[in-house]
Length: 293
Length: 196
Image 1 (tube, helix red, strand yellow):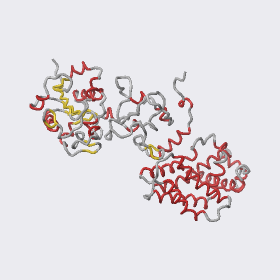
Image 2 (tube, chains in turn yellow, red):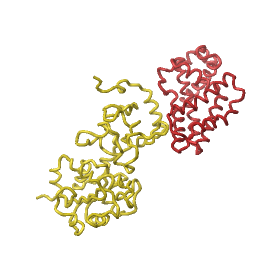
Image 3 (spheres, rainbow over the protein chains, first blue to last red):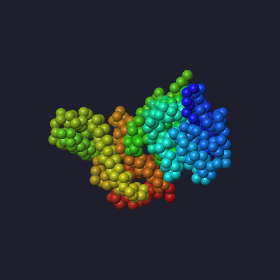
Image 4 (cartoon, chains in turn yellow, purple):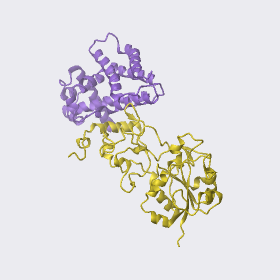
């Protein structure tokens, strides 16, 4: 029998959204042929949570889901203690989702010193510096199942993943969500006039879409292999970024007509110059419904 | 070589602006402009292929000129109130020193849209100028000095007011020098746009 990689899925302060997302991975049988959970909160596993906290079970990868606070306990033991114990024996640590990476929505609750493992939003933490070399972040609310699984396979195959400043694999996070969006033509010519759920219009200008400044592969590796938020007509909410969740996710924050957040790396003057030119176009085709019969 | 050609172009633009201001846009011909520069008409066409092309180049030139002046103000580390005053001062100074420039903007560009409709859709030919005004507004709102509102409501108030004063000056209706109005007008504009 071939040797499977042994994985511990530890839930900290979490809604289990990443677990739900993971369960949608379409090739689960194949995955479970190559990996086994020594413990997972909802998938049958060899050991109980009590076993995990009371003993030291052999393990290759530690997956952490949920925001982290030393006050928060699992099986009467602080999650920080559990993390510290297993981080010593595993080959890699993966922070699964935005809460485990940056603190996310649970950080907003104001619960005692809640953050991600290495970041409090975009602020790097001084704690757990010794684990930095072992950690890979796969942010997202939830994480895309293929991003998680492909990261785990990269670990299994000992592929050296190039990481960004937040320890996210560039393979998945060097792109913006804007990349591959089917509404790019509307973006180019500054046509918003969108109505939620409809095919027409770019949602960046009025409807709060954060895709041009959010790192992720949502429009490259589609969800459930068919769709993405922006393709379906809902703005990107920037769920992979340190500042998630921002407020007013359905409207674009503007200062006297200029969006407060511009596409990554684009200067204000250049943006306005280009916008002035784009605005001069009046393309009837883009103002109409795609199917008007 | 390029610089020399650019310099000549600017001389033609300046001569044209002065003639347009004194004789009127439609009464001024390319031969008139050539004559005032002691150039041959044929040579003029090496620089501008028609009067309409020249007209469009002139408005772009003015937009770039004013845009550059505004950019200098925008980049200074001063309050929005002070920036407002500096913009009013700059605009009136330009209107006094180069009256033909503002005159062209108000009387020719804004009043003869048929000349500009092909190449100057929207704000294409006044992009530099409008971009800097947008940045002035955006930064003012961002730092909490100016009230968030529709861009054109604010733009119309600011530029309409300044343009109106220069227009009155051009009609010899204003009793005083434009400079004498800087204090009051800066105060009025800032008070209207600010969050105070």
